[in-house]
Length: 219
Image 1: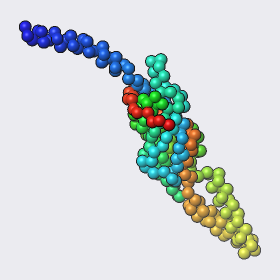
Image 2: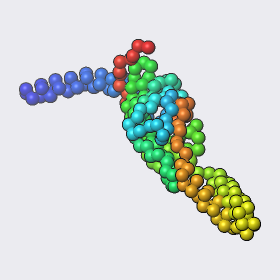
Image 3: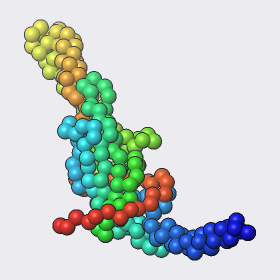
Image 4: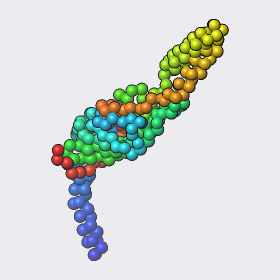
């Protein structure tokens, strides 16, 4: 008899508490999985000046709406970090940089924490986002520019050879000019990646990300 009474009491308490628990769970907003997050970078990043662990910041461009409710307004603050930097080489190897989004905070103090890799970057000159981890790869050397430099070097060398050997040394001069152009290209680095302030970054939230209330800093 006592066990039945105890079970009845437990069942009654659970019945009374369950709606409340459901209410609070539903009251916490969450960014749905698969949501595209558009961010405008407010920090300038570069493979020349930045290192692993450096922070970056941005602003949400387009609001995020879930279940008919705006949960992340435009203008919300975005914070992230640089997780990988590789400077461009002189002979081969373009620059690389990896950016990760860590959290989004609304003006009302709702914060969403997520570790999300970059999908796209519009505004980084010549750079492209590649791979599943969202690595920005910098531009390589211009083939056209290299051909022009080699041609100019060969032409100058040929001219020097012709002057020095009455025209018969032009072939030797051309070889000297081409060699000089090769040395110049070896000493010339690939371009550094520069992701300027104002670049539009695209992230895709991989899984549902619930928010939490945090203190709002007074301006």
